[in-house]
Image (cartoon, rainbow over all chains, first blue to last red; front, side):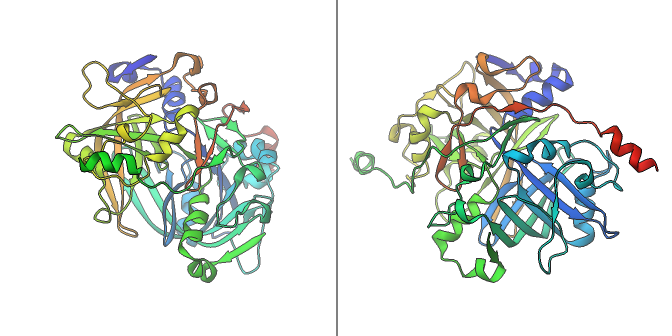
Length: 214
Length: 214
C-alpha cells in the first residue's frame, strides 16, 4: 500500500492532488443537470456529486463549487427559475456529456457545443437531455452553505420522473446496466457497469443473536 | 418512458418508492465506515452516500439517517472519538459488506457477524477493513443538519490515505476497476465496473468560440 499522511497530502502538486482526492469517494454518478436562464439561454453541465438525501419526500442533493470563481450558470439559473432537470448519462453521450465541463460563457448553450439534444416535455419549461433513460424534473427546495470550503449543497425535490420501461423491476428498482448508464471515477474516468446481483434486505443472523444472549 | 408525476410518486407503496427513489441518483459508491465506541466496541456499516466535497482541504461528506429512529452506532462513535475510517468495498467482500445493513444492537460488532476483518495500523486506534484497496482515516470536521427530512451531512477530512500500489496512475488518478471495487444501485444492487476510458481535461472548442464572436 502507498501511504499518504497529512503532511504528504499537503505537499502534493495540485493536479496530482485533485486527481487523487476526486478518486477517493469511489464510483460516482454521472448526471447532466439542465437549466434555462430567465433570458431563455439553455445550459447543461455534468455533475458527479448528486447524492440521495431521502425517499419521502424524494430529495436529491448536489454540490456546487465556489461561487465567484467562474460563472456558475447552473446555480444562477436554478435560483432564477426554481427548477432544473437531472438526466442520467448513458454510453453513447459520454463524450458530449464530459465536454460540458469545458468553461463556456453564459451566453453559450452546451447543447450547441456538443451532440447533446434538448428535449421539452408538455407543460415543463426546463429542458431535459434527449434519450436519457432516467430524467427528473427537480424543484429547488433549499441549500446549505458549506463554510469549510465555500461550496453549497443544493437540495431539490423530484416532481416529475421519467424512466425507460425496460429498466424498471417489479419492485421499483432501476436496473441502470440495461440502459448502459455511465459512472465516473476521479475527474474524467468513465465506466459502463452491468448489474452483478441484488442482495436483498438483510436481517440479523440468528446465530449471532444467540451468541449475544449468552 | 414511464412517467411518475408528483401525485403518482406520493401514492406509491413504501417499498416500491424506496427502491425507485434510491435508484434515481445513479451509480453510488460502496463504502464501509468503521468506528470504535469509547468502550472499545467496533462497528462497521455500509454507506452509499459518501460524496466528494473538495480536494483542498481533502473533504468527504456522508449522510446519516434520522437519529432517534434506530441506534446509529456509526454516528455516535464518531461523535465520541472524533474519528472514523472509510474503506472501499471490493468484489470478494460484497456479501459481508451488504450484511452490515442488518440492524444489530450496539454491543454487537459487525466484524463478528460477517467475514469482514478489522485491521489496525500503527498509531491509529480506529479500525480499517482488511484488504480494502482504498482506506482512509477520517477526522470529523463538522455537520449540517438537513431539516427537510431530519438527516445530517457529516463532513470529515482525510488525514491518512492508503492506496493499493497497482491502482494509482502517474497523475494520481485511481483505477478502481483494477482492484474490483464495487458500486451500488438502489438499496441492494451491486456491480463491479471496469474503466472504459479517461477523457481528459476539456477546453472550449474554437469553432464554438468563433461562432460566438460573430
